Length: 276
Image 1 (cartoon, rainbow, N blue to C red):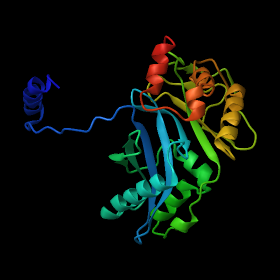
Image 2: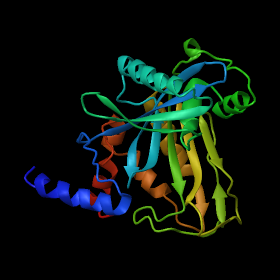
Image 3: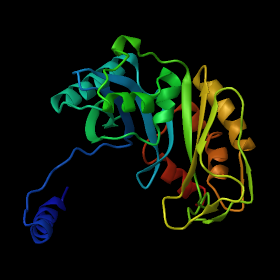
Image 4: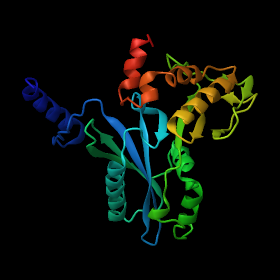
C-alpha cells in the first residue's frame, strides 16, 4: 500500500507516453482465483441459451492446460446466476453464434466478468460430453439462419468430462519439441475421445502452436472420469517427440486435482515445488 503513491504517477507517465491517455483502471485483487466460463449459443431469432460451465483453472502462464465440466466448485445456485449473467450479456449485444463468457471467481463464489470469446474454444468437447449437444453443428445451423433446436430446459448435466491439452513440449521445462512422430497409438474405450490429426510419420513443424491433440474423457461421475483419464493417458503413445503426457500422468494422481481443490496459480506452485 505504501508504494501506491509512487506507482500511480509512474504508471500515468507510461500510459501517456504509450497511448496518449493516462487514465488508469483499478481492479479488485483476488487471491487464489478460479477461472470458470459459461458456454453460450445464440441464434438470429432472439434465442440465447447457456450450456453450463467449464472449469479452466489449471493453467500455466495464463494458458489453459486441463479443463473440466462441470466445475467441482460450482453449485446449482451459482451456475444459474453465472448462466443468467452470461445470457444477459449476449442478449445485450444481440449475439448470434457459439461463444463463451469467462469469469474470475473467488473463494466465496463471487464471480467477476473477465472477457467474452466470440468463437468456438479448444475446450468445447467437455461441454459436448456432458450435454450431448454438438456445438459445432449448432454453430453451423445458426450461421445458416436456422433457429436453435434446443431451449434452456433441454440442457442437462450428464456425468463428468475432463480434457488434457497434449502439446509437443518437454513435459516439465515446456521447451518446444518439433520433429517427426515415429510411433502413435490412441487410447480407446467407452467415454474416450482424442481430437487430433497426427499419425506415425507426421512431422510437427516449429512454426505454430504446440498443441498436437486433445484427450477428452467422460464418465458417469468425476471419480470414474479420473480413473478413465489415468488409464487413457497411460495408453496414449506419441513417439519421436516430447509431449506433455508425462506431466498429465502425474497431475491426475495429485490429491488436490482429485479433490478439485485448485486455482489459477496452483500448477505454477506445483511445478516450482517439483523442480520444474
